[in-house]
Length: 122
Image (cartoon, rainbow, N blue to C red; front, side):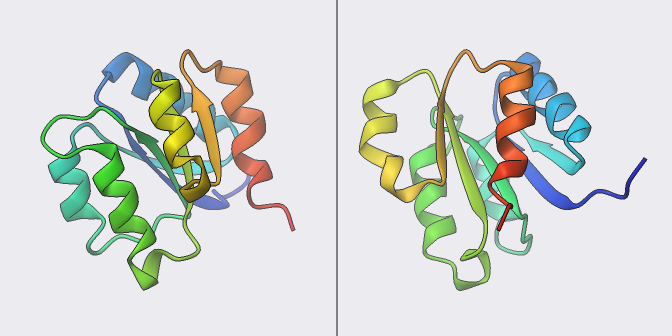
C-alpha cells in the first residue's frame, strides 16, 4: 500500500454519497476527510489546504457555490482542484468554468476513482 499522494476534502451532506466518494478516493490513494455541511466546510477551509475538494452544490447552511467562490478567492487554495458534484445540471453549467471537473449525480464509484487522480497528472 502506497502512502496517500493527495489530500481530498469531500463536502457532501448525503452521508451515503459521502461514504461512496470516501471509499472511491481512498482506493485512488487519496487521504480523505468528509464534511457534511457548508458552515463547517467554510470554517475548515480557512486553515486547511486540500489538494482536491469534492463539492456538492446544495448543502445545509452555506451553499456549495459560496464555498467554491471562497476557494477560488483564497490565494492559499489556488492550486486546489475542485470537482463539482451535483444533480443540478443548470447550476453545474453556470459554474463549470470555475471548476476543474463537473460530475452530474449519480456518480459511479469507478468513474470517480478513475477521474480524480487524472486531475494531478502533468
